[in-house]
Amino acid sequence: MPQYKKDDHIINATEKAYEVLYASRGYVPTTEESEYIELYGLSYEELDALQNEMLKKFLDQEEIEYKSRATKKELIALILGDEGVMDGTNGTENTHSNESK
Image 1 (cartoon, rainbow, N blue to C red):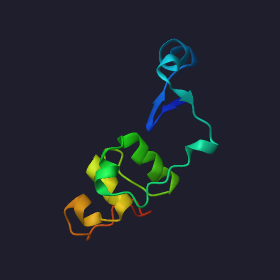
Image 2: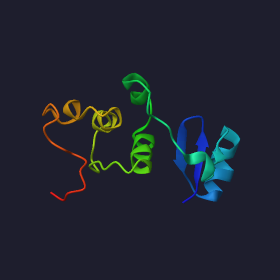
Image 3: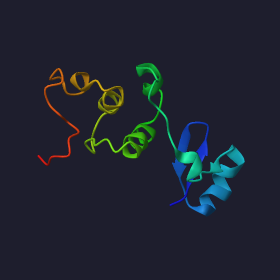
């Protein structure tokens, strides 16, 4: 399904829905070139202001594994490299390894 973007907000919508609802609201079609997301260097507060979808896209782009039901706090912890905050184990559990559990 095509994606459309306005500022930092990305939506999935059919072309008809885009034409009827979203084009007039300032959304524009995304392109592969403009989809690279850079979140390294942002603070916790800045990351917390983003939607989970954007955090997950960044993690996918960086090939960092996460649980499908991960909370925003968990996603941010993976980006910041702060696993202990994420799982409450002070970093003793590797939550994004390539090993199956």
